[in-house]
Length: 373
Image (cartoon, rainbow, N blue to C red; front, side, top):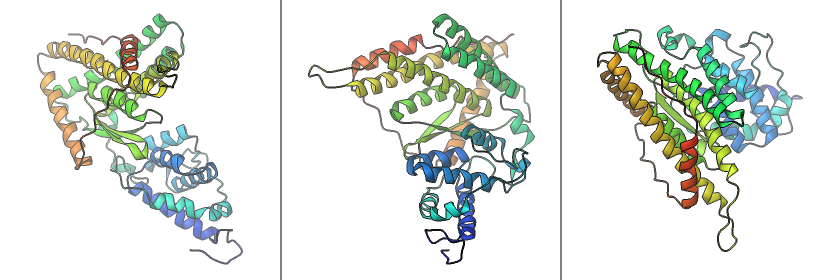
């Protein structure tokens, strides 16, 4: 509460009060379903830069209150990606230096944000409860070494100016991802009792053109037997699926979004007959078409590799995949019991639509590998 002691900031909050209340509010955000990336993503949209910087420090201080092995590894990864140093959790000793006197002067806007957050589904163990994660569930995720190779190949595909090189790099990445996903389902087809169930991750969707970008993510998710829900006001989508498939979706969507954006900007601006800009309508239609066509290509390729894998497994794989689809749907319903049907997107620029489909036909999704008999 506000105070009059010597440590009281200009806003009327004592440093100690601001510290306790804000750390508690951040913990409440975790309990309301937010993860570090979710919270910072929302704050980036609603806070000025100075307040955002202070919030990042408060978040780091809150997470430093837990033993390192009780914080979910995804949370630690998010902090690394955000450039927020959690010293104790990373084994670097000592809590982060937080200017609590300055925080006290800005407590009101920070608390206004934290107290106004809508509740979300809790997707991972809260800090301090990591023991709730089973070894079997973690074992079903893609081997970090495979992901490292995949990301390196996709980085090369995105950076090269030679289409043939990009195709080679992306083909190698897609082969690694598809093989791991199908192999995981094949293990379950043999009755592995340690098989992991569906999970969920959140993927940020930036403006502009967040609707068409969400359409691309939805197409990639469906092609990989996942489901996607968009929280427009919060700037992210929740993707539900089996762990290995979720990692495929995250990695492939990121690469395809880079390819789509590059192809779209190469098209340049557009004007109508009256000399008015129609660039925004063109680009929106471009991305909508790109996403639809990518979904068609990925679904066709996935269907073929699954058919081949089913033959190799003696017609035992497709029933397992159908059962997994039902599990994903049940998990989705559990997380979003009142899910509304999405609105259809309307095409407003047919040149953009045609150009987007053409670009999707040229995008590198890589050949799907055949599984050995």
